[in-house]
Length: 470
Image (tube, rainbow, N blue to C red; front, side):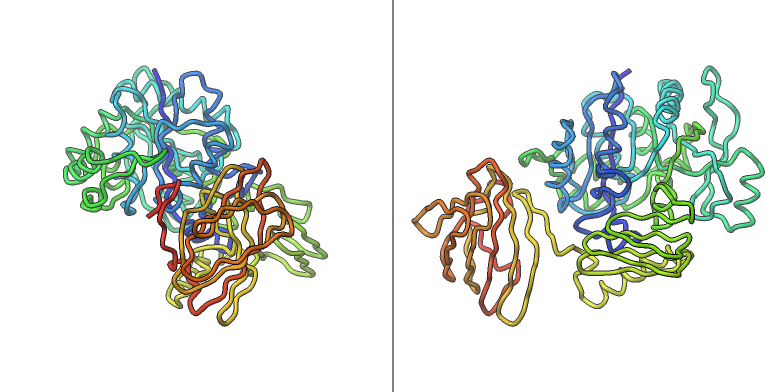
């Protein structure tokens, strides 16, 4: 039986601020290894003979990053499905199920941002689940608890399924418990952490969803029926998808269906939902410290220190979370890891941008990074990948100076196109149509100095764009 991975790559990971942000969330970051969490999720499956090309469901803002990260690990997706609006996991999974032409394959639904350290145990659990899914069950994976965790929902197992060793009926789903109840669950031995991973046939899932959430099936089916290809992406019809109720797969189907089954497993699973959770899956030194980047510690215990851009030193502290990025620093007691989301709420309410994006902003052609900004001027560093080019555009309110630092730049200004190399520069007046290209085989780096009365990114009039942006 063929398995089709369906990777859910939505979400913003606000509890991992300042590293995870809306435009570059945790699933697209290399948090644990040199690969991003999305890449690790797909690499885990890449050697399985019966696994087909994945379907990745993500938001519009992340589409080029997702496509590039799949290309980097030589994975060709079956489809990259773009959610026009966030509607939680049930509509996202339904969109993938409707998109699949073969409704009798097995869909392996996986969040893109989980860590699994025991891949052998993970595959064994999936193989057990395949037996139950072939029998028409909607299978979820329960993680064998190692402690009375209050941050996860739980699944209680019932009777073992016939002809499926290690597969059980679901007795009930329970919400996140208090500490005393979590200890009772641990002692009982038949309660498992709800992993948010699933395996089932699309036809079975859609039939159950039709029974319990028919409006969702109708809206999503219409959105897929009116979807269209845009480069490498499948764009769901916006108005139709927006009509879908917003609900999780647990609430919409799993807690109601009589077909729910659970496969318990111990696979080194962690949903990396906070900085303390990330610390658990990283190497810790003899004093219980986890570090990454240019870090110096002296008399420090049980602390996570992550330095992204600058040297970070900590002396004589314990039980802290210290995370440095180029424009923000987090210092928190590890017991307050869940409260990091309050910082994001404050930044949103204050109209600031630090919750949304980093100074380095990725584009399909490369990236740009803010260096300095003041009254009527802004300085940026720009990198253009080999063979890529920016849109043909113009600005109403700003002029630009471009200085080539390294590589080759093919620059068009109005009707003149000219090749520029290292240490050469040019000037683009306000209102001039212009385009920047990299015709070489090495990355192009240049410095851009903007000057004018308004320097916002929305002062761009695009006349032609390789990537289909309006």
